[in-house]
Structure formats: structure tokens, C-alpha cells
Image (cartoon, rainbow, N blue to C red):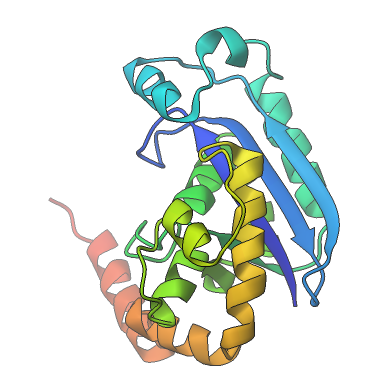
Length: 221
């Protein structure tokens, strides 16, 4: 299985409202060698108070972001690049806390931004949600005796210092963490436990939910 390591910086802490500004992607083979690399820059269509607050974290202000490629063009170029990849595990550091813990911040932001142009299906095809790996979750799974935020975890593992909240730097350190931690686990066992804890529905539960949904659609209030 291949891997796609990613980190993004955006205009809002709320993933469904956030517009992408920068992102970095490392595509890995099954031995964790870097095969492809992609850098994303996008000019947000809206720069509001949330964007100003976020700029204090990642350091990218409007004066810089306004010179980035148009948002629509950036999303199309990203989707074209994703189209060249085989199916892979999506890897990010952020804890799986989005949409009932089925997603990470980075995956959710990418999905929301691609959705604006009906391009989200490419991400779903190339990096299915059930194949998400959070290095935060890996550290928690291994019960490492440290804080699991990116900076603390990297220090615990003896990695070099880096510029936190820079998309490329965060992606690279996430990659280095992945290389260390994945050696300590059985990936299939990790996924079995992770998906069980996240409440992934079995087929019976799905059918029951779909039946309730179908019936509710027929109600007239």
C-alpha cells in the first residue's frame, strides 16, 4: 500500500469553513520512499476575521496570500495531481476528531475545498476515509510517554527542530514520525482497533440506518 503524507494551512480552525492557503504532499511507496512531492498554494476567496486570526498561527497574511494562484485553479491542479496516484493511505498528524472522528482536519479541509468544484470524489477514490492514518493516533496507540502534539512528539522521538505551522515543515516531520512509529505496529491490527473505536458501522447497522432514512424522507411535516 502507498501513502500520501499531508499538512495544510488554511483560513479557519473550523475545517468546513476553512479555505486552503498552503499545503504540502509527499507520496510514498510501500517502503516509505518518497516518489512524488506536491506543493499547494491558493488565494482564498474570502479573508475575514477568522483568516486574520489564523494568520497569527501560520504567518501567512493577506498581502502574501493574494499573490497565490486563484483558488479554483489551485483546486483543479491539485485534483489533476491526485488523479495520477494509485489508492493510498492518507497520513496527517492531526487527531481524528472531525465528523465523529472519521476524519482529520487536513482531510476535511481538502474535502470541503474540492467539494466547491465537485472534485471531492477524487480524494475519496485515491485516499479513502477508512485508510486515514493519524500519527497522533499512532502515538496514542503505542502509549508513548509524551504529549502527542506534533512538536512535543517530534522532540520525544529525537527529530530535528522545525518551523511548526509551515505546511512543508509539518509534512516532513509527520513523514519522519510515520517512519519511526509504523515499525512498531501491525497496521491491520491498528486499523481494526481504530475503526472499532471510531464506531465504524457494520453492514447490518448501515441497512437499518438507511431504512430509517428512507422512511423519514416520506414524511410530510
